[in-house]
Length: 289
Image (cartoon, rainbow, N blue to C red; front, side):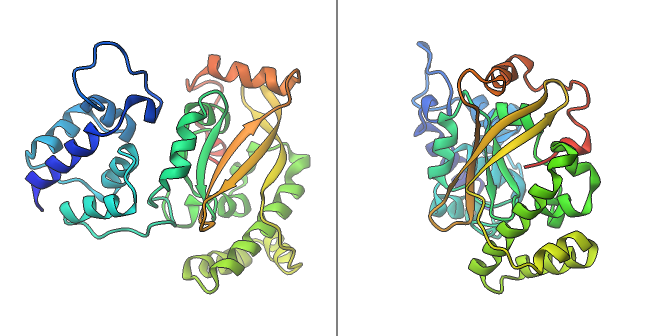
């Protein structure tokens, strides 16, 4: 591990990011050309002391998870992300799939601009990669699980708690939508082991999934009307929109409601509620995409 080069690279990337690029106020008294160390640490979910040690080359050994978080916080492109991993002497993870996937910079830039509506980026297997604060308030934080449980589609058919996100009468609709979407993903990805394994496990564990899979209905979920069961605000009627990355492996989701509707008023209340733990927002059923 080249600690001095890793430190220099982190600082050089930090210096190139304007606060406005990541949704932070510029402020009149900034003494650095880009982000402050503590701001990078906050964006990456690290302590300021730990990040400072990294930039000083003091011997910190960043894990793969930390490197993924830093690549996102510093808005690195694919080559920049790979270089960061090489400097840290870590194997480079897959670029587009799984919870440790590198978020595509174009989608991440758009997410940074969506400050007044819930939005998040997920993989094509519905693994949450990054959320804005309003999305956390609306649907709860992303799960820390790895493997199949990182996918909300997998949890939908194997964990009853996952279904508390929607009213019971809406469950059949969402089951059909999830399976038809997964059919489209499986066809596009061909014989990808990750998808093949998920489908096989779901067919074995869920008769409902197996029956829906055998209908062979295919439809990518581009837009959908949802009723979300929020623990504080009650049922919120929203429209969910999807923007796909060029390769189709990642999606930016954002939630809106027509002006003047009850859903629009409830969305405005989300920023007041914040991300405090209220009425069970951290229950297992609140971990979803």
